[in-house]
Each structure stands twice: as C-alpha cells, then as structure tokens.
Image (cartoon, rainbow, N blue to C red; front, side, top):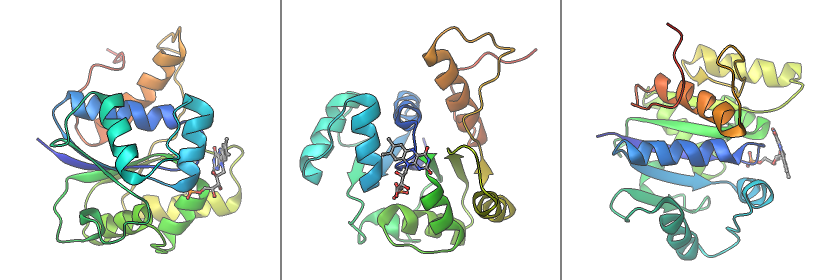
Length: 198
Ligand SMILES: Cc1cc2nc3c(=O)[nH]c(=O)nc-3n(C[C@H](O)[C@H](O)[C@H](O)COP(=O)(O)O)c2cc1C
C-alpha cells in the first residue's frame, strides 16, 4: 500500500482534505498529515473541529476523528521541520494538498520552504514524485494563474474544486466526493466516490 503526504492549508474547503484522508485510509494507505496555522482556523470555522491544541492532543483527536491507529496515520506539526516528510531520503508515493491556498501555491512555486508543508512539497518536486493540489480561490488573479502555471509545468496535477453537473449532484457530499474522486484518480488510488461517464 502507498504512503501519502497530505497537506491542509487555510483555503476554504477543509472538508476536501479530510475526505481525502478518510478515503486513503479506507483504501489501506498510510497517511502523513500536516496542517498550516491558517488551515486549523478554517477547519474550526468550516467543520467545527477545534485543533488549537498541542501536537500530541491534535494527533489523538485526529486518530479518534478518523477512527484509526497510529500505525497508519501520522500527524506532524507545521513547525516540526525535522520530521520525516521534510527529507528527500524518506520514501513516499506522493503528496496531495487540499485545499491549497494561494499563499501556499505561491510559496511552492517559488521554493520558499518556510514551513513543513512547503518543505515537504519542495522535496516532492525535487525528488520528482507525484503531487496533486486543489487550489481554491475566486476570482483568480494573474499572479495566482502564473504560479499555478509554473507548478503545472513542473508536473503538478492541478485539480480545483469544480463540480460537474452532468452527474446530477443532490447533496454537498455528492459535490465534495466528485472532486475528491478526481483527485484520487490522479494518484491511481482506488475509490467509489464518483459516477463515471460511460
Ligand atoms: C475562513 C477563511 C477562508 C479562506 N479562504 C481562502 C481561500 O479560499 N483561498 C485562499 O487562497 N485563501 C483563503 N483564506 C486566506 C488564507 O487562510 C490566508 O492567505 C493564509 O495566509 C494562508 O496561509 P497558508 O497557506 O499557510 O494556510 C481564507 C481565510 C479564512 C479565515
């Protein structure tokens, strides 16, 4: 089974990141999660999940949230720059950043590596591993678009949350699952989340 790094940033749409983790765990993959400071603020606002706690307590809370054991789920504080995922010698199968703020898009496109998430993304790029991001902002400025183009040219898969209506979504879950399914498709992670056109 695969090992995937998941990054959650302070863009709207925390539910996407959490659903991606649920699906990866369900499919038997190992997850390494880090959340930016703004990511925690948005998670509290959108999911009513308070992660304003010590890293150990956050880990416990998330293990409980995802109903898994520590063997398959690791949480790393955003400032824990000496963690495994900050090193190119630590082997993973790829990284998903969802939702991805324009601030983090810019940091990755410019190689800033100012926190663990940005460093992990920088490592994924330098090691030429698969990376999928779900950028979320509207409208998009030329700066956003230029940064996204730079990443796309580096092979990063850009999967914004853009619902399809030919699938006739009836609930928010339907809409979320559709985008999550398309993100997982990019890494060939098995799921039954979206209706496929046939
Ligand atoms: C409720 C809320 C929603 C936000 N939504 C977005 C968004 O959709 N896209 C975005 O780029 N920034 C959004 N922001 C602003 C980012 O959180 C902010 O730029 C932050 O510095 C991003 O930092 P990070 O990339 O380290 O998470 C939002 C902020 C809040 C509080």
